[in-house]
Amino acid sequence: MQRGGYSKLIEVGIYAVAMAFLEAVFVVYLRNATIPNNIFVYRIELVREAATIIMLAIIGILAGRERYERVAFFMYAFAIWDIFYYVFLKVLIKWPASLLTWDTLFYIPVKWIGPVLAPVIVSITMIVLALLIEKFELKRKKVYIALKEEILLIIGSLLILFTFVYDYSKLLIQGGFNLSSFEMQQILASYIPSAYNWPVFILGEIIMLSGIILFYRRYK
View 1 (spheres, rainbow, N blue to C red):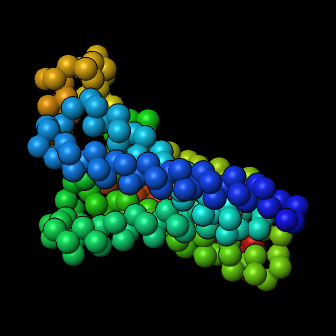
View 2: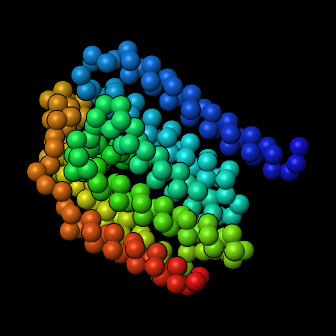
View 3: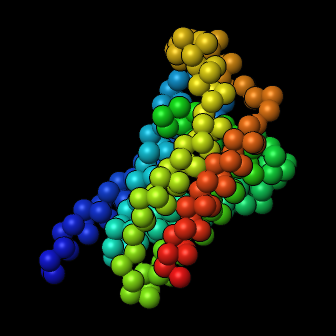
């Protein structure tokens, strides 16, 4: 076995374990289909999503050769997964009704909520950046994200993240973080904000795109 082969085995093993967990979660969902939203299911969702991120990260590690190329493959896999998640839901159960339908986007570290269109736009942005990184990598250029570009990407990402977690975090603070309360669980399960903070989201997207444009111009 060539040097590095053992590390590849470890990575694939982690992927297989994460995949096995997802299979187990599927069985749990079937057996608890008639059980209302509760803290047990919420905790399973946390671990399930962590397992999903692990799987996607392993794909990036295995597919990429250099650091930023691995990040690019991870972003690409994550974005494709996210977009086709909604595509398949639409095909199978005719949901979401529109791109403005509210959805639970993520659970780590708190519940993310927003209209479907928002994560789809973010995913498209991730695909663009990933493809640019891979394009320049294929040209044998030493690809890296410059400090100014990285700052713009981080600031833009944090602004978008704020729009996803603000409403739910505010609700949690008002409820004293009492997730064990059945009443609180019911409120959190049925809660839909009155409006989404599109201005902050758009600002975050503009800042992220500015970082991507700087990256593109530097390598072009």
